[in-house]
Every structure is written in C-alpha cells, then in structure tokens.
Image 1 (cartoon, rainbow, N blue to C red):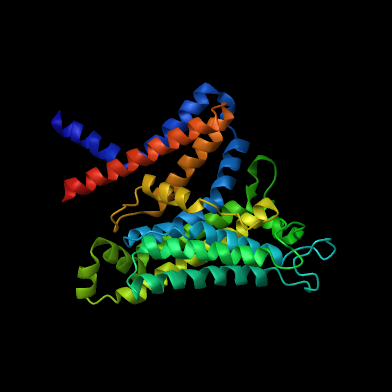
Image 2 (cartoon, rainbow, N blue to C red):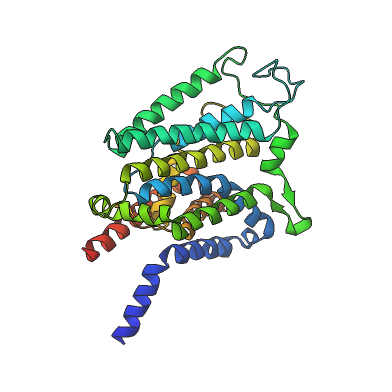
Length: 337
C-alpha cells in the first residue's frame, strides 16, 4: 500500500504542471461548456505563441542560475524597430518617410540581431564584470527602455503609435494555413518550430549540457574545464535573439507597436518558467514544462475572462499559483539537499 502511495505521489510530483492545466480546462469547461471548441483552442495558442518564445529565452537564463529582467523591454524595442521599417508607402505618418520598400526579411533580421546584441551585452556584464544577473539586467532593462523611447520619439514620429504595417508582415501574425476548423496560424507554427529548436539545444548539444552544468554548480563546471564566461555570453545572446523574434511577432500579431510594448512580459515569462518546473536555483528545466507553464497562464487569462471572472481576481489566482509553484520547487530542492 505504501509503495502505491509513493508511486502516486511520485507521479503527481513529476506531472503536477500538466495535472493543474487539465484541472483548469476541465473546471472552466464544466462551468461553461462553450469553452471547449476549436476556435477557443486556436485563440489560446495564438495568445501563447509570443509568450512561449519569450519564456524559452528566459528559461536559458534561469537554468544557468541567473535571471533576466530586460526581456520585456527588448521585446518592445525590437517590435518598434521592425514595425518602423515595415509600413506601407502611402501611410500618412510613416516613421521613415523616404525609406524604400525593403524585403520583408531585412527588418526582421535587423530586429533579431538588435535583440542578440543586447543579450550579448547582458552576458558580458554578468560573466566578465561579475555583476549579479538581477542587477545587470535591471540596469539594461531601464537603458533599453530609454533607447526605445528616444528612437520612438524621433521626428517625424514624435511618440505616435506606429501603424499602417504592410500586409506581408501582418500576415505572419494573423495569417494561417489550411481551411475551416483545420486552420493553423503561422505564428503558432513559428512558436512550435522555435520550441523544437530550443529542445534540441537543451537536450542534444554541448551547449545544453554545459548550460545545465553551470546552473547546477558553476564552480564545479569551471573546474571540469567548461569555459563558463564563453557559454554565458552565448546563452544570453541566444535569449536576446529569441526576445527579438518575439518582438517582431508581437508587432505582426497586433498590427502596430509603441515603446510600451513588452512591459512586464519578463515577469510573466519568469512566472511561466517557474510554474513549468524551471528551478529558481538553476540546473533544472524542460521545454515542455515551459510551454505548459505559458499555457496555464493563458488559460487563466482567457478562461477566467470567458466565464466572467474579474481581472483583479485573476491576478490573485495567478499570484497564488506562482507562490505555490516556487514553494513546491524550494521544497523539492531542500529534500534533495
């Protein structure tokens, strides 16, 4: 009997995130059966897509034992950069009035590279200057927002929301493949592709192996011959590139951008990672767990709104889930020690 109880406890412990997600969906569906449907499922996936990419970037950092508070502001900066270069030519308030029609891929790559550069800066500050990740990314968060606001305020835009985006760009965020109930949004396919690539990096590459080693015990990783400085810079750079891609997709999905895009996204991403099993002490985390964590918060936001629960109650529920997840994580860590 004790063996069975232990097996059940072990199963619940290993799959708690998926059990919570299932309970949430079932509970909301019982309250309002209309919640179960293809369109609802598709909407949840679309809303989760950019958040998953941001959370995967944050997961890289958390697994090394760090944190990244600059993620949301990088999303905002790269959204503004890509949107500013992809407006239709006859839009009356073009950000660059004399800019020629650019190939779609050029502004997208520029935005991703900008994210990568700022991620690299974070990595250099953390690994070479030995500034704690919390302080380093707090500083770059503020600086990036200032840079974005200056760029956003340049003539002739002067802090006006950027609109009039080209159809080939917005189609990335709103278009889909297939027909009828079997339409799959492009943005969801991109998020799935990114998740697969990140899973491969986590599980099948030397980068992933060393990332987990650094997060498990940085000093032991150094003694074993891992170039911790090099790998931290690479990891922060990859995270920055993912934020850049998320910023591009967010601009395409919403059809515009302002300098306030991405505000507080980093906290949602950190919360999703923690709820998804990424340890706050480093060295532990999986891609499926991160994806499930993002889905849980999307289901909370979408599902509770669907059944008429007010936004303030939603915040209370989200906060309780975050605290419970961290407490559960710390308990597991204490028991291992």
